[in-house]
Length: 291
Image (cartoon, rainbow, N blue to C red; front, side, top):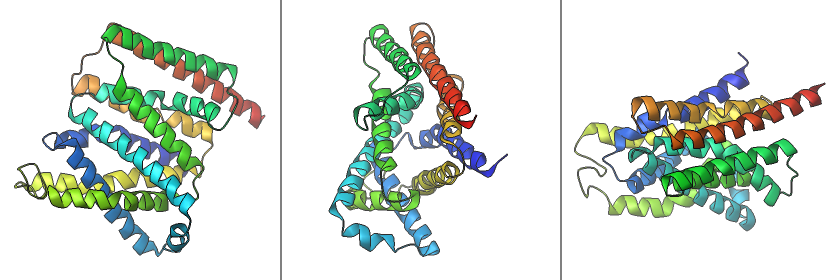
């Protein structure tokens, strides 16, 4: 297997297995898990930067307000995505989380049209229409908007758009984002220090280790993804991205026993059909360009 595909596939597999990790922290408030994810991610990436002696970018970025503003926006989107995902997984909504990442590629198409003024192809418009129909179906049949999926897709899609035009790589970008989020996170960490049996430092060693582990858990897949994305075509990367939500879907149905069937199945089928159309169109265009 080519290294690029291996790196990207491993990154998406790790993202797909995240529910197995975060369900170990169900007894900790999602907001506290988010704070630990920010603090320990920062500690991990700073250690990596120190090891690799990659500090030259930081003074230059700190003198550029527009760059700092863009990364402040991406940091807020990232924290919104993380908080929503942690809450969803620890409250029995793994299927809703998987749905959010299934529709993220189609949100990217919509954002490309609205923000970057790209021109989607006819098949991409059809895929967007099918996915919209699926979301509307789920809304009507369940009596509520699938807000978890929509927040995850919108926040990650917008985050990806900002990082697409960013001037920093994956490691430096994550370092800057967590640096910007660190001050309020550190204040909350101090305020919540030992306030209860589920707060850090917790009475049981396991909870402390699970909380400390969210740092490398966050950074490692991002670095693998960056390494893979540099080595393989975007079409291949686009097909591999379904590994993550597919694993989450399987975990939600067969491991966590979340209800799935009837009207909910129909909504998912519409969205899967949209993704199939979207992927087939991307593959067709890539083959034509190669020819």
